[in-house]
Length: 230
Image (cartoon, rainbow, N blue to C red):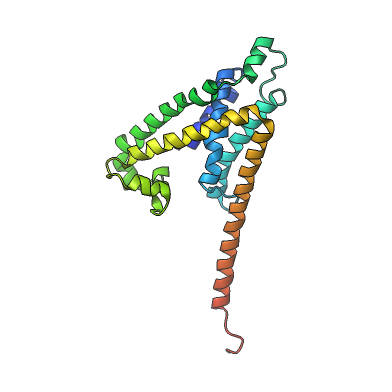
């Protein structure tokens, strides 16, 4: 529960329940939810598989906060933050989003998480993580040695692989955060992006069901007796 997706969900809870009137926090949270967290759906191949609790939980952790961020940003008066009664200057500040506020500033909380995560997973609890075989994103990303990310990370010596992984994670998250600047200023672009993410998850789920049912069908055909056998 130390992975980035949980951290992003924690930021959302902080905004909703602790500081719903903070425009600065809203922009930081929006950038995290509409940037790296949303892009993780196609990147991590999140799948809408309704009978699989793990897959459904993973999709919910990424998709649900992104939808909440969309609702809070575009329909603040219908959800948690009724801003019509705020002073005009405060309302203007809520809707104004500069490149610094939406791309650079959100890197502050991200760097706080990444340094803490690196020290905990790869330094303080390194032996325990290995002994207990805890599932981490680092293991997931390097499991398929043919994948581009795995090939880049595994080229380094084992001692520097976690650091290289964290640096790559930083670059990808920064790039994903930059797209949040576009989503902030365009309702239709933001909506289309989230619909596309939902569509990708449904497509992945459909492929999963197809392969599972196909394997079961082939297995049943292979196990069934031949019509001429008695």
